[in-house]
Length: 234
Image 1: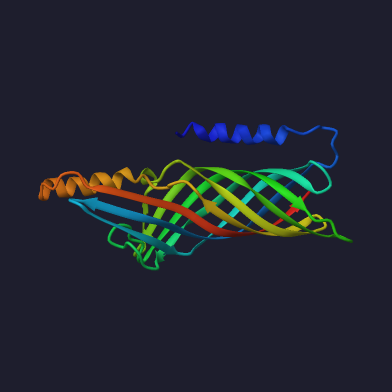
Image 2: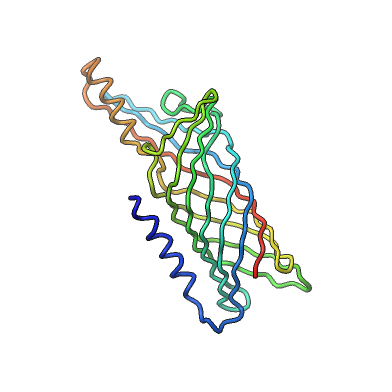
């Protein structure tokens, strides 16, 4: 899976290259800002005719992001915007839910990714330098690092987190000349943790200790959060 990172970067660079070198309207930019993410999902367990499903929601974990992008106009109002971003996601503590299954109490989970979004941008021209815009699209992410902090101790959990993630992005912002501000929502779709580990652990414990046989256990865990960015276009 580690070989997929160069593939993602090359793919995005190719997307950056889908532009006429004589098209003067194509612009490049830099951006960065703060993220506010949480880990959301549900877990279900079933055995011997019994089944139960619970939802869980971690608290918010603050991180940061930064990246580069290209804006390629299609017409006066629409643009295509591919990006390459470093971004931190994760969650902090637990607001309740299936703490018996997925425990976040007094823990900070930080997941660092290289995200490669491809967005459609709707520009709303106004008089002067002020120009609102709306963005929407999808992304593919590659995990760089995954850590959990508990009682001052930091542990690497990269082996428990899937290398590839994906999801949808929705945003809105305002251009001020060459500068802009944007608020974006990240709706993660992929199951970010290797949930086979939960299943193996539970089945092993019950088989060895009680002989109940296989237990049906399913966990769905996703990143969700907001990003606030400022940037400049050239």
